[in-house]
Amino acid sequence: MSEADLALRGYRALSPLAHRILPVVAPWSAKLRAGLAGRRHLADRLDAAAARVRGGIWVHAASVGEYEQARPVIAALQARAGTRPLPVAVTHFSPSGYEYAARRPAGDYHDYLPFDEPAAMRRLVAAWRPRLLVFFKFDCWPNQILAAREAGVPVVLLAGTLQPGSARLWPGVRAFFRDLFDRFAQLGVCTAEDRERFVSGLGVHCPVTVTGDTRAEQVILRYEAAADGTVASRLRAWASTLLVLGSTWPRDERLWLPVLPELLAEFADLRVVLVPHEPLPARLSHLARDLDGRGIASIRLSQLLAGEEQGPEARCVLVDSVGVLAEIYRAGTLAYVGGSFTSGVHNTMEPAICGLPVLFGPVIQNAMEAAVLREQGGGFVVHQPAEAAARARALLGDRTNLARSGAAARQVVLAQRGATEKSLAVLEPYL
Image 1 (cartoon, one colour):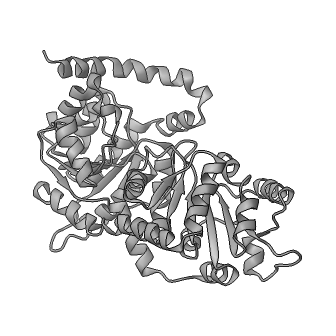
Image 2 (cartoon, one colour):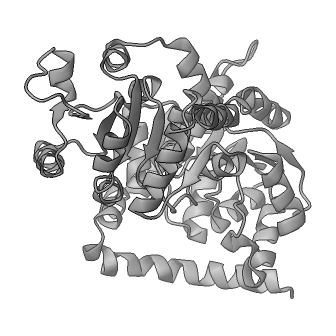
Image 3 (cartoon, one colour):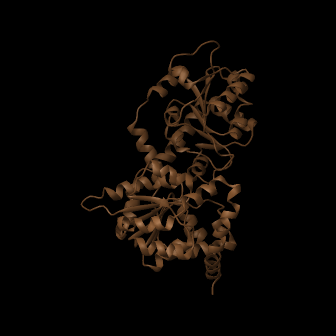
């Protein structure tokens, strides 16, 4: 018996036990508690949904990012010319992914994925009898895959990615993941570099095709379909040079606030837009006091839009609404994207499509596009305040360098055009 077979048998044997432990540790994790609560009576719900989705396409999109990659493909499946749409059932692993999709449903049915136990996955496959199982990005569960393959259901990965240094490439587990991915009918991956890592690094034998990142293509289409709105127009009138600090958490703010006074002093035309990830009143008040203590006058975005700017000239806008960040980037000169000191960087493609160089912290393993931005010279990792200031100074002080980096960032996103069409072509033989 091979090393991979032994590892897979061990996983299958231990997975039910591992999931029994989750309620014990749930009191220390709000996310885990939410996931367990969402899965109450899940098996009954999934069985009841069988009549609606049987014989259709089962899409697994673990969380928000994967679901954003899945949405254009689901829409393309439902719009296939000359065919009656197959039902599409979408499962999600994380509470954030499920709740996000519940507000923006794309499939015929959305629910949580059961925990990856052999019996639960066999029951679900038997109830739904899907024609095809499609994963997005890399959240692929062994028992789910095996249950599908045992039932003769083809399994496909789309918008797949395998980062350099991924744990899946480590010697001790490489054979396990190679065996797992070799059970797929086909892998569609984001970049040629991803294909090389799957084929040469992991050693898979199943077909691997570069299909692109469908989420990036959606960013392109949304950008091209929109024009400057009120927010972008007002910010353009307010500032000729704009540093956008987007989706920030406290750790991101500790990176930038200490160096903003020196940057604002050095660049007289520079203004800052600070967009907290959670713009709660108490948080905005705290930021305003912090800025004031550093000699930086601030104003709320709502006040700026209402023409209420008074007193000392504001050098910083605090954004007190949600859903406007993509439009803010359209007025920007340089962007920093937050989240990259905690669980992972937020959306770097929105500033990139606007032609902005993109700065971020070190935690980017969750975002293939951030790594590509760094490789192509459109994105930069910063760790400390002095490093952030130096990078901003180098870009803002050299407009040729700024334009070159912004063009490189934009090209990273534009290179994904056509990803949905390529992804659908991979699925066609199994429909």
